[in-house]
Image (cartoon, rainbow, N blue to C red; front, side, top):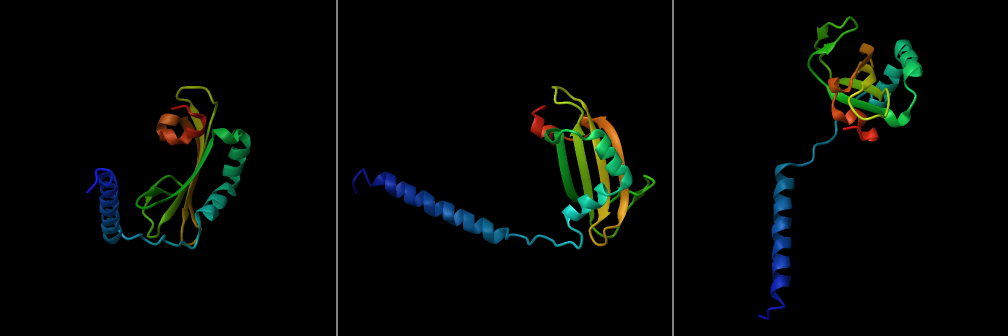
Length: 149
């Protein structure tokens, strides 16, 4: 065997080992089908933003798209009802968050927040709230677009 063939053989062996490793992982953790809901995340977002209090708050305080973050995630367990009391719905719930910084300057600043909880089955609204809080009440991704953290 020539010494010039050794690197090629090592590369082939590394490729085969990688291929076997990936195959084992795929067989061990097959992809899970995404769960389909009667109410999509986009519909939940629209339901929250169509609320008269939320839309008025949005028009009043949300002015700079680059300072804004929209997030819709599935939550389960306790959520607040319309009176702020914890309830535990049987179905999955969309948590809709629309957040915007008050300015683009450095440091921890207040953010405006619209938060709503919507049924994935029926579109029923469990709670919609508006508030102004410090960024530390949320995670750093709320202002990732302004590179403030």
